[in-house]
Image 1: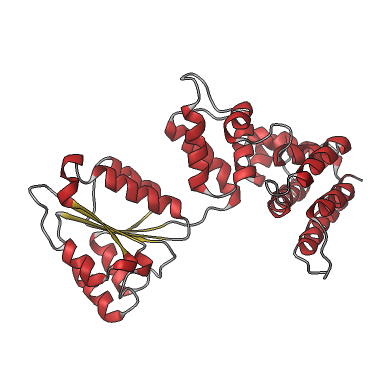
Image 2: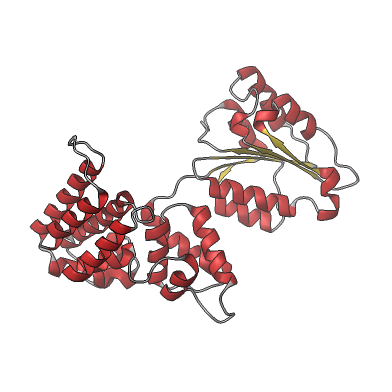
Length: 339
């Protein structure tokens, strides 16, 4: 049956294996994580040489995969057949070949764990995918929405057994974005360098991820929020001088998200910390920022700022037919926002 990535990972870690897995979607993190867990747990290390096979879609076809799947493990309980780049598998789009896969999926060999890593979104309405759902499991790994990233980072850290401050979460999310693989790698890199009793805070992010504590998007947003003209311009100048590491497009996305939430905060009837946290979908730790923002920016000004951000994005893309350096666009935007 179709399952969420977290449920499937939990099953695998408890050594509950399905005879066939079909992993698909536009977020590679969970596809790779499930495949890695299966590689780690299905076949003992001493038996991998004879009972674990990694195939690549571009180098084989459905018939070749099924010939491996129908073999019995060599002096072992089970074997693992891992098909990477399954979206390039020969015959995967041909109905006749799909029918062969369907036949196997309806009557799979219980001593085989067959895994398709399909790095694209597949149509789960197709008959062969439905047949996999009968005895196996289909997992869609979807790209994560930006507003879900802080919760994901906090949950990941909890699973890894390390505490992380809300500010550190926001710094990671603002500077790395929704690349879950990179986020997880950066968190693990930090953990390796921490003391046993130490958590992840803003200083740890600065030391081990290379994000400046003073000159980052989080501090830029804070300077704009408090209408600290000097600080906002200092950071804008730094971004302009280091545009390769601080491109304007992601900054606009973050600011647009922030001021859109400020707009919602203005409209909210319940302006208590708890009420706004629920309304905006943010950690209660950050509600005070939005309360400060609605005091500093009246509703008409917020509407204008959102217009300025859209205008800047259009000019960045050259829609007005004029090419303007990113640094100049950013400095002009800062002026419009804070004045």
